[in-house]
Image (cartoon, rainbow, N blue to C red):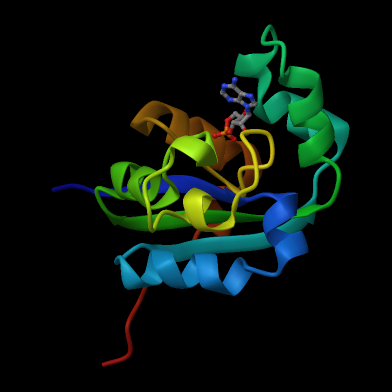
Length: 145
Ligand code: CMP
């Protein structure tokens, strides 16, 4: 399996509920290491640009409004099969359809406020990571010997 990087966002509802630590623990316990991490208040423009692919969707305006409604945690997660693993940990987009034990099942309230975002492909992961992080802000993970 390949070592991949993926973009993870803990959305404003995750911060409001105070579950940043619990969510990051799930990533770490599954072997996904945060190699970049930043708390940020997105502007409307930031959110519109990030979700530009959804511009024509009926939920776009609400999505952008929600993502700019409070700070988010932006992270790059690194590990084996990181993109699929992160999506498995998150669960289905709609928390009502998410499997038991997933982040969205346990913490999210609705499809609009679904607590986390994760890249859905290698190409999108590269684009999404570059949208928020410069190369120098992503640290290769090192261990003390
Ligand atoms: P996310 O993975 O961040 O990608 C786009 C977001 O749009 C999605 O999570 C949901 O929070 C939100 N959204 C709202 N309605 C829908 C919908 N019908 N289908 C997909 N995404 C939706």
